[in-house]
Image 1 (cartoon, protein in one colour):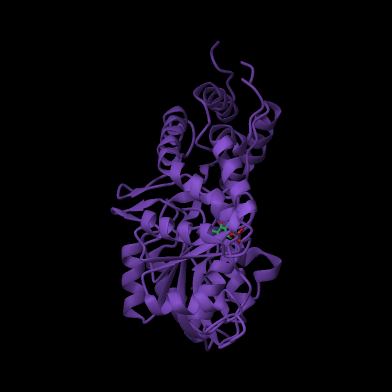
Image 2 (image 1 turned 90 degrees about the vertical axis):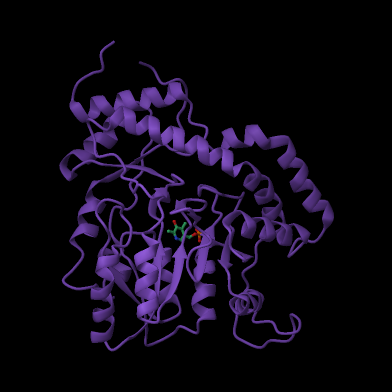
Length: 384
Ligand SMILES: *Cc1c(COP(=O)(O)O)cnc(C)c1O
């Protein structure tokens, strides 16, 4: 079987072909409008974004990393404070904590969903206290697009006086028990990096919150801690805004998001139907819908590199998110790890491998990928 054409890991060109002409117009209109910073498209997009997620407020910012930093700054978190987060995640989740000189405390994940294990949070809290730190917040991550198990995480935060920040950079628009990520947590943050479920044509991000007071502080923080105006500085802030042009792009992309979300469900279903008898396919808890930022298999360590090579030979790109958990990374080795270590986080980083995944993956290409994956996993060539 030959590939039906070149295969992209995430095909951004297909979406562009679909919304291209309208997009070109919208970008040009933003250019002609001349308000490059905080132009009217930014406010329009923030309103649409908040409505879409069911959050009361959304604030655009420069990227998904800054979005988390803005929340930590709004809470006044700093040296001596601990923020509990998973170790099996993208570096930004913990980087922002270390960046403001607070201490990330790494907690264990659930082996089936790859998200924070609510049962491991107590150990992380004890570890923070034993290290003489003041526990302030939990950052939960919706890894690969599946929401974290928010009910018990929220309960844990409430019991222990912690703020919940939901890092939904990968899980934008996913569902948890009828709620949409973006509306869950004291804060939710997301990224519009091009390859994310809702991506723009550059960097972008947002903070979502229901809380008026937090809204006001973050609106100030993201423009240099402004007070009455930009030259009245009432707190130490940062420069982190969503560009007008990116807001124009996102307005159009958000309008097709629900359709793309459905298309990704169908792609994921086809993968799982085609591979579940030969591989460990993703487990999505019955009370959740993933937004499928990634479609991630588990292939035990000695076979994974061969699997990747076999697919590469057939023109199929794969990716490993993440080859190491953060507590195993040079930059993060010095930070506390909950309890007696994180064996699950270490094991899954050896086994995960993600297949091409996007809303425009056609059935013929997918059939080709499934066949190649099956033959790599079983060592048998597919029947002709
Ligand atoms: C992408 C990502 C971020 C950071 O987003 P940027 O816009 O690239 O700064 C944060 N957390 C997670 C889990 C991510 O996947």
